[in-house]
Amino acid sequence: MPPTPWQIKEQGKQEMIRSNIIASVGRTVLLSSAVMLAAHGTGHAQEAEIKAAIAANHAAIESLDVTKVDPLWVHDATVTLINPASKSISVGWDAVRKAWAAQSDYLAALKITQVDGPYIQVKGDIAWETGVALSAGKLKSGADFSRRVVEFDVFEKRDGKWLLVSHSATRLPE
Image (tube, rainbow, N blue to C red; front, top):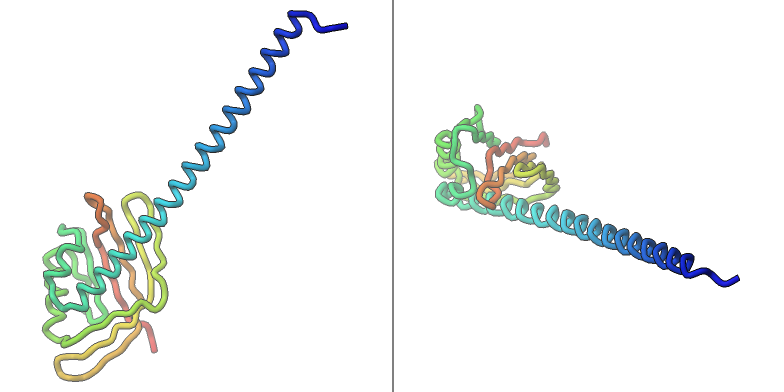
């Protein structure tokens, strides 16, 4: 027995519903994939930005010119610094800047080479990294030095730029 006009109409509705469901699922899969790819790309982009900030910080420190360190830091009372030669923690931008400036009092040359890491984590507008670097150079007394240090940096993203809020570099035992 051939289908009735009513049955044909119902089959057409069901096929249309199935087509709509398939199209909807397809759009959902595509949208989800796009979101995942965008998020993954953002993570890599942020990691690249932080690596660039670390490299800029190393270059500024190596220059022994505190004016090159200035634009890489947040300038407020919350920033902290511990250098390998530090006897205490520098707290607040004025103390941090003074500690960086003091390096030129005893260092004639400095080279920082990343040897492990950096290992970067990002949570919103805050990021931190840990790595090991080789710090080598010459003291103003003429003596050469070379030591491995573990670095720990905390960055905050402000106005689209990753700025340091904390830097710690501690000598590793030989």
